[in-house]
Amino acid sequence: MIVRTIGQGQCEIPDREHAKLDQLDKALMTAIEAHDDIAYARALADLHHVVAAHGVPTPDHHFGPSDVILPDADTTLDEAVALVRHGDLSLHEPK
Image (tube, rainbow, N blue to C red; front, top):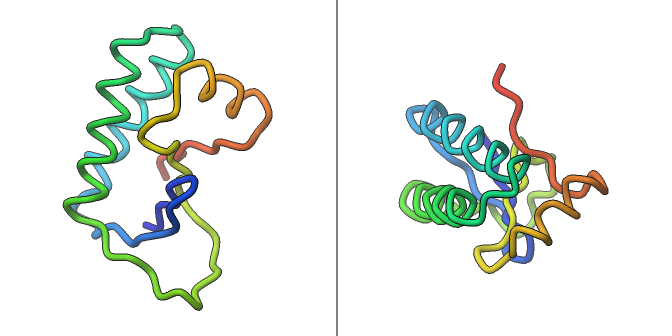
């Protein structure tokens, strides 16, 4: 799975982490939809932790599509809501 973090680039996440990312992705989207600041901050931090701990940066010359687009760690809930509304944030759809 390729994850793009807005403002930081792409990294590849091992298959063994997909279920955890899906779970956290759902939590993030639920928090965005509910406009729940605390749940949003927790889910976003947890997602960034998984990506930082398990992600391998893609080569600079790689320009392939991303499976997940993750807001930068300092993206506010209101900014995330706007990104989702404008289609600039595409959270992962489990396969």
